[in-house]
Length: 197
Image 1 (cartoon, rainbow, N blue to C red):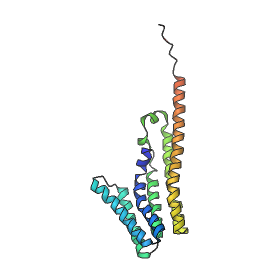
Image 2 (image 1 turned 135 degrees about the vertical axis):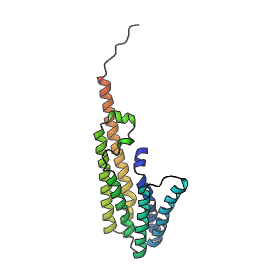
Image 3 (image 1 turned 90 degrees about the vertical axis):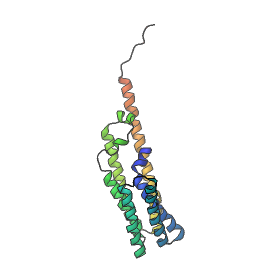
Image 4 (image 1 turned 90 degrees about the horizontal axis):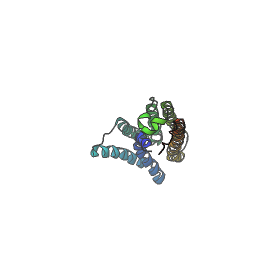
């Protein structure tokens, strides 16, 4: 689980401003207020990291930049679709980063690495990239073709639920492969006769 959280860190940081936008839009029906507070939340997160002495990486700066740019466009046009479309760009960038062959390999525990073929993990890395691209496409559709209420329901449920479901499928699949590999290894091990006392 720690590895999934590490890989999803840029998304989690971006989600703060998106969730603030969704929640305030739903509670107040005031897109301008929701946008302003979401922009402040995105900036506050980066400032908090900076003040703590944590490294603010390129993805976090990019996320803040998108909040500011899309938020400003929303404020100037009074059109929430700019803020609604922002996660599409984030998911496209994260998906593109996940196309790097073997990006998941450094996160494998040594015991798993011993029993699971590298090609399996490379494949799972591409599946994760596919999920990011699917989420980007769906978000684009919901942002452009549906209401703020429908989009809010989508963004509150699908991204998190799909990641949990994929993580569970990957975990169970890799665990089953590792257990079969261990069982084969134990079966192939030569039997040692008990020594006579």
